[in-house]
Image (cartoon, rainbow, N blue to C red; front, side):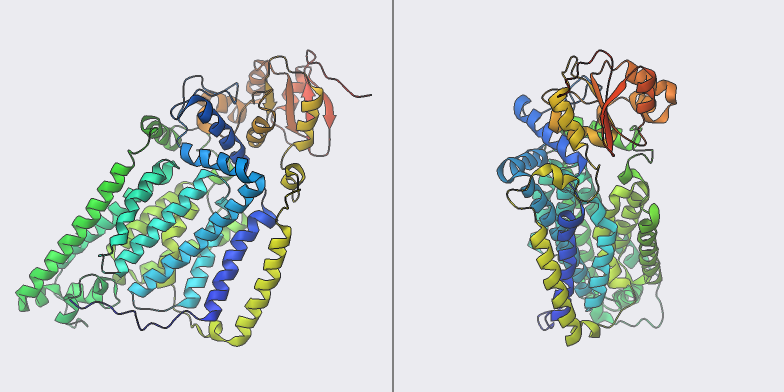
Length: 551
């Protein structure tokens, strides 16, 4: 069998490498210059502490006083323990560095996937790769942070690159079997591990469809490829002219039965190989001590979680929400339209894979990075082919070098130094992101009686981390940890239901936003008073709470 030869392919231009380095630097700069730590990271750290104390398995929650009382399943247990180890070893600066590295890895893996699919098609499109990777950044960077989901996204991007590389190498690469241990790791990191067997199942279905189509497709006169193309097992199937070759298979096989039989055997091997890989990755999903609870949690999050079905949580909103979301939507439409225009040239497996991720994307905005893992390579291959000449020009390379140098120096100089405290860094860009001063006041001046604290949704994780030795929070970002009725009363009900909820909480203190609080008005009606405030937050207490005020 003839195999494609890529050994003579020229190396990447300096302009391409510099442009890719700039995209990586943008991904690295975001957590250092723009972002703060994700609120979820703090409750992940608390969960890791509970895992250490109670053991690896379902645990009883003591973070929130409103949470379910029966044991629950921390399905991201391995990643959470890793987060805690990073925090204890390298501090919060280590968390920022890991966030930056995971974002950089995502960009590099996306670009590698783009190049693999282009090489499979025997094309070179450096500018297309840069633009498609930029689109992936638009779709994804907002959802990357220091938490288990980002590690899962990187692992899935690595698996996707191995899959695309395997398809370039005529689906005979030994490295593709690494997706099985990746699946084992994934299943202990995040529930999105279920996507890996689904992806491979889509490719298996695509290979089966190719077998059926080649066998039963009618003869088309004027096909551009002759019998020799049909002897190339997989590279041909990805090539532009391969679709014509497939359509002419009946006439070709009638003329050469031996070649037809060899090609049929090759098609059968491909479909069986993908089926085996999909089955092994599905079995790898069982390789977790949290299996029963993880399966239950997966169903609950997708079909029963009240908060998932509402726009209250930002990452649960549609990906096209807001002005920036409209740009994402335009890129998605352009990518899908390009695929439709080239539908006869795209293999069935890629179609099934892409359409499956479009469904996930339309379900929740948080699936945007997972959509980008396949959408970016497809975009690089099937967007209109652009000339690479701009990247080969010396002025462009010089300009990119200058931008990289200046931006790189700024990123390095703004990375927090060893002596930098956490509290001011958290609110350095948006004052009030975290109620740091309010938490310090409660820590110093409020005496716990019941140990219950009322707080808003996004502040629960931080307050549980900061004051967890003295107070249990009202709620936090773990939507699965509270009953549907609790969420209905807190967010979806009227003022009376919220007032009843906080009245029955028997809390000592409340830390709430100064503006737009859900519970402030209800607490005032119950006789609570404000004992401390700044421009962003306030501390409220009931008449029974003892507050010590320094003279």
